[in-house]
Image: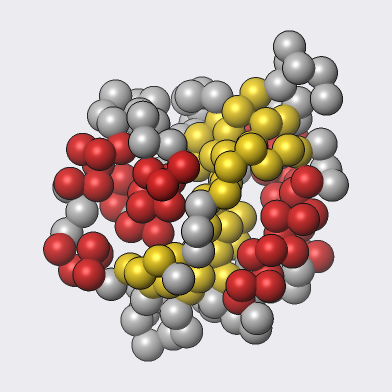
Length: 169
């Protein structure tokens, strides 16, 4: 990896079908075989499914990576890995074997357009306990690139129910 071109990014990995922990580990392994180096990984966190809590619970983790891939190339690798791990895209928010999202790429701000379906930072992360708490675990000084608010403050804005319904496992 060319060190002077490498960028840091944060990726959220989740699963609520099959062997969830194994799915997350497989996703990490596949990421590392695609010009991506995992620098840090959070513990796994269990959360209720959103928006329908009757669906299977999720296990989630966040990893800090270093890569020479562009944001779009990284997104394409993540989508490919999801497919390799059995992800089917029928309806939004359906249970899935693997969900990989780019949370932040080198503090870049990108808007989704007709040629790419990528928004950075990932939209609505400030409302997602399953992103904020694992991200805080591995990057206590992270700051939202658009809102310019640090992660501690973002966590303080979470609803009490969001803090009660997540547990590190």
